[in-house]
Image (tube, one colour):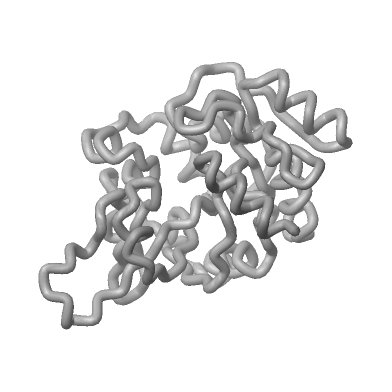
Length: 242
């Protein structure tokens, strides 16, 4: 089973433009993410896929591998689907470009899902981490996920799910970490499926899979990491790096 990683990297992020080129302890956020992904030694190849000459040159000039995406894309999945169409692989791991603390333990758990899936019932897999902080649970920048008893995703939302109507039932809240593992064909299928209203409303791309009946296996991890969505996140990452 050939496993590769692709890191979608837009320069003009809506909440924090240019965030991937921000300085994190002497290197850009995107280069830190790329190097962390390579350092896991889990992949036969790691590529950054970008629409930006600045990001492309940043990776290539530092000895990395990058692919320029030709088309405009609605999501990171669309961007890497274009890049992976002609690449020989079975499983594609999408690591978000703003995850400089990417580590191998959690990625290995996601990969293991496919090794155990003899019937190929799983279209993609992703990570979730339990959250207890009320501010984070209510934060729309934090995507929450609910799962069934086999840890297949039921829904993703920026709202708190489940809604805490009865605080005494012991509900647990899980944050979706933006790492996806796809079967190559599931990723290629994604690009020809039109966006529906739930995805358009929440702006969460993996909802599209659920709307079309695809199965997403969620894997719990204890490792939080830091996703850089805002300038405040970047400052937090700088403190953590020290």
